[in-house]
Length: 258
Ligand code: ADP
Ligand code: MG
Image (cartoon, rainbow, N blue to C red; front, side, top):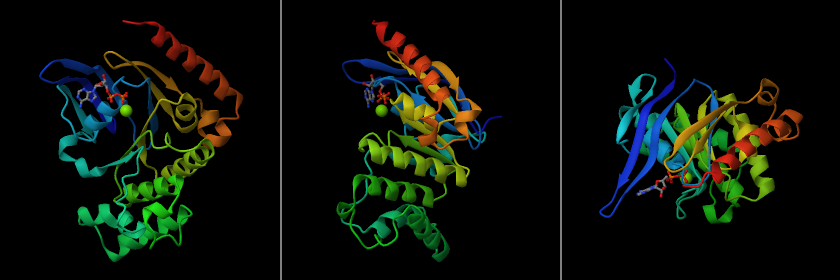
């Protein structure tokens, strides 16, 4: 049995006027310690699928199991990091970082020290008493990551966490996030529409097609790229080959208009 198993997931949003099928016939699994990406054009159901995995919405059909248990029963073992950092503007960085621990009643002297150490490890020592508005976008995303990791979730989900950042900050943060998750041996799912980011960061790339959202193809990232940091991987010749392959596949999806 895999760490995370998604079986026959189908999801339709119903409103008064219409029904939108966001996902159809999704079957996939993720192994413990694996880093995978969900790649695809906007509207192909990536965020919907993450919300279903997080147990935030119930799929119209199908099941999601984390270590053999339905996700609706293990919600607090899943951490979520989003494009926007959702730091509370009136709370200090330290208060923001400790918030998840506090809410889940896991705040102890020990867990507090671990969280603050991680903050320092992310290059943010000294900002504890500052407010989010005093930090840059990249720094705030690092704070958001520390907050997410502080509660030690078994599965980490990252929904386009770098897409609002400038290119250089994004590349640096990719390396930092990748290194940190490897160190903690976290299982992670990254949602992105950036082919390069998906290849550079992942062990496998799941390519989704839209209307309705379906799993189109799965790409295995070759070992020689996986052992490099995302930044180094981007400079490897295998990276360009895989980029071209996925690019063509995405392009073919976009030319099939309904
Ligand atoms: P992605 O994250 O890949 O851009 P989404 O999961 O956000 O895709 O959306 C998939 C489809 O479901 C889209 O057609 C979108 O319009 C629709 N959708 C998403 N959220 C809702 C919602 N709350 N109510 C109705 N339709 C929605
Ligand atoms: Mg989305």
